[in-house]
Length: 252
Image 1 (spheres, rainbow, N blue to C red):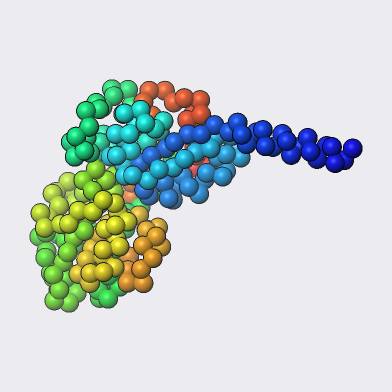
Image 2: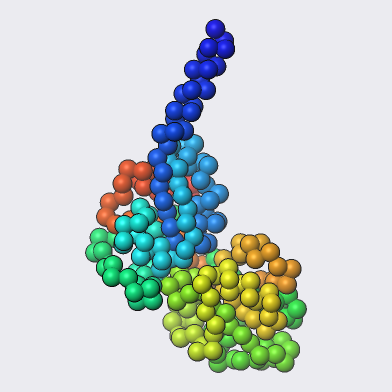
């Protein structure tokens, strides 16, 4: 009798697993790595929803949402900024999708943006004014902010990146990035490049220090640059999407 009960229990678990609802969420690589992926198992256990996090950047995530390819976009900026990032991405990739007028923004937490430097760079801290001067190109040599005589090389994530847009707004007062900056497809790619270039500098979520897997990186001590992290839906969330949103809000 005990063995039969065990078989029935095992079968019920398999059936429950087979009927788990899948929900694709795409967008900010930082939100995907730091928030969605670590929570995936807990979400499935609590709600029965099997989330599929797809890191592609806030702008591309929003565009995928507009195109109906995913149910939820993950962003690391305000709705206004995420929409602006999406418009930039729409132009960049030539998509004919339009921005829906009924986007709904669901904030689920806060995150911090860090400034990455090469480990051999003697600069250990930067003021807010120095950050702005570096990324706008007003200061072009590390000796002008307490470092050695070495040209500054600014590395940025793609123009549709939430990290890029939020740092520009909060740390640079909306000023333009230097025209000499080099763009990369993702924040991680820009950080990896800093590990190869002693004069390099980039911005990203602090967790990318581990993801870059480089012994040649460090994070500068700076005034906090904080941003919201959120999930975005077109109109009222579906029942599965609402369950995921509620899961995170209960964790706050």
